[in-house]
Length: 222
Image (cartoon, rainbow, N blue to C red; front, top):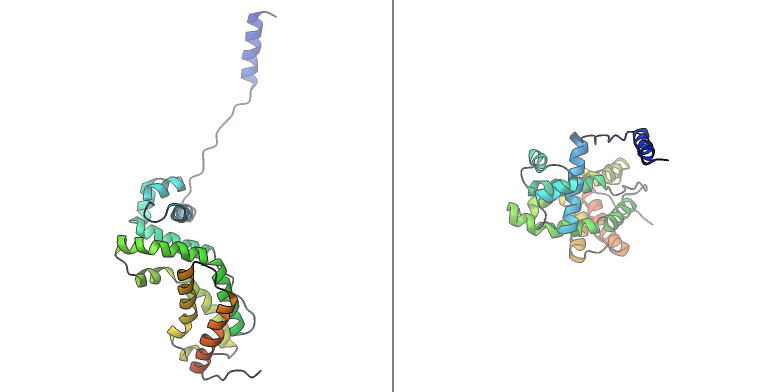
């Protein structure tokens, strides 16, 4: 076969190859885009910490433009707070329904102590940066972040009231928040999961006696 024939064959083969088309990547919008940005912000916070995190680094990780971030959050402080809330909301702790307030609280707090220790460590490490950058106090940050546990614990407390175990109208909010505050404090101090023995102490020695006292309920007999 001549060189010209070879060239003709190669040209023919080239023309016979299927035409490859690249489908344009569908643009993310609305909640999908916002979730992608918040996931990227959380992962950036985990990987590099608050001080080294920037709006540009988050945008690069989320594969979007910096202007898109600024249209939703005015600065990295607000974006980081939103990312922490988003992570907490999308990684819930199971809310048990054992049939008693005591057992529900032990199971729930134990679950928090296991599932949330890494989360609390990241948030704790972020506190100093937020306080310096945004001028917020720890109480301000807590107010903006710690809403999920309250929502989930309300399910446990409401069921207990429906069973007649407690009267929520007579129990001070500080008593209801106390076991969660203690758990959070211990996780921030140790960055370790809280042993079930310690959880049981918080519930049996502190929480249950107080809620029964404030509800006018006597301790159930053995």
